Length: 267
Image (tube, rainbow, N blue to C red; front, side, top):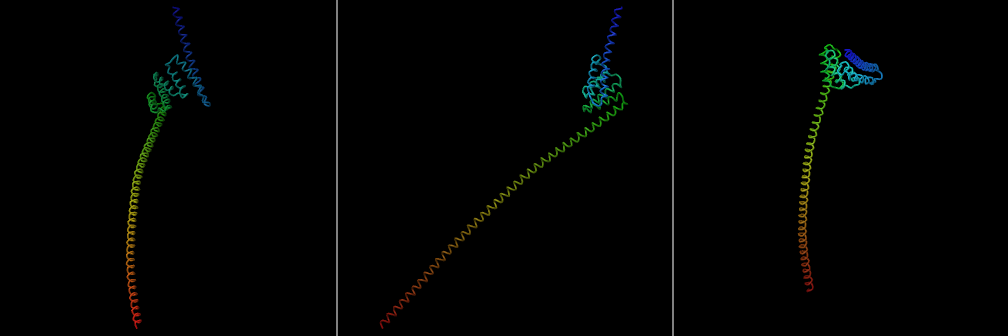
């Protein structure tokens, strides 16, 4: 009987010592956490790192303690380890039975999500926090802030889409104008080619007309030369006839003179 009592006493002493060790880690963790909060000038995160280390030591002994998991989540959040802090607060929300404690966990889950730009998820977390604690003004404020960010994000996306559509239409019009200019240039080239062919044809016609005129002038000139030659021959013939007549007159005059001389000698 005494042995049983002794064993029971030793177990109680051991559990008490273990519990004291766990609380020691929590006290040390809280000490580092508060020192880090007070150190607003240097903004040193080493205090939160040390607090995280002590909280994890305590949780190795008692993993499902909601308060210690909550403290761990706070230390992680202060180090901007938002993904890890979210996991710690989710564990608290899952283990908690008290509505107020659940509300606090979902509130901090929403904060961790918001810092990761998970706006839609943060809105749902804030709503869940308000379901457990409808009068939490801080959660209401954060919910409205998240909604405002979502609206701003949607407006920005809408504006970006409008700019995208505008640029798309601009590029479309640019391509259309490019095609129109291409068609116009093609038509212009066709017209220029047509005008060029027309000018060439006109030049050829003028050249042909000039050649025809030159041929005609040459023919007329040849005809004129021919007529002049005939006239010259006729004139030469006329001169020859006149000369023959003159010679005949001279001969007749000489004959008459010779006859008169001869008669005079007979006398």
